[in-house]
Image 1 (cartoon, rainbow, N blue to C red):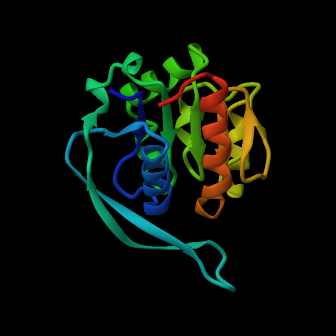
Image 2 (cartoon, rainbow, N blue to C red):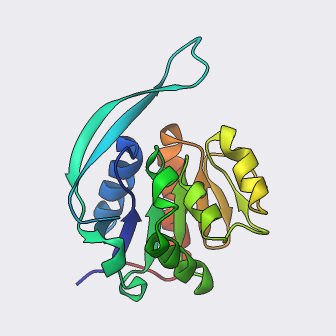
Length: 188
C-alpha cells in the first residue's frame, strides 16, 4: 500500500485546485483521499478571470465523491495534506475536525500544501503565526491578521508549508510540494 495524502475540501472548491493535485500526486505514486465535512458527492466550481472584471467569476464545475468525513480522519494515517481554494475553505474553516487535522500536520511538521483561499483554514486553525504564506492576493490581510507573513508567489515554501495564489500556479505549486515530500523522505 502506498503512502496516503488527504485533500481537505468541500462544496464550491475550485475544480482545478482539487483535481490537479489529486491526479498529480496519484501520478507520483500516492494514494489520495478527498476529505470533506460529510462523506457524499461534492459540487466543485470553476473560477475564471475576465478582463476588466474586478474579481473572478464562478460557474458550476465537476461533482466528485468525498472518500471520508473529517470526523472519521485519523491524521496519523496520512503523510501530508492539501487544502485547495475556492469558496470551500470559507466554511470548512468552521469545522473543528478540519482544524484538528491541520493542527496535527503542523505540530508534527509534516508536509502541507494550500492554495488560493485554502490558507483561510490554516488561519482558523491558528497555524500561520510566524509563517510565510501565499494565498489569493486579496487574502493577504487574512494571512497577516493570523500572524503570518504574506508573500505574493506561486510556490512559496516555508519549511513543511507550500502555498500558492490560485490555479494558474498549479504546476509550480505541486512541483515545490513534491520536492518538500521528497525532502521529508515521504515517498510513495
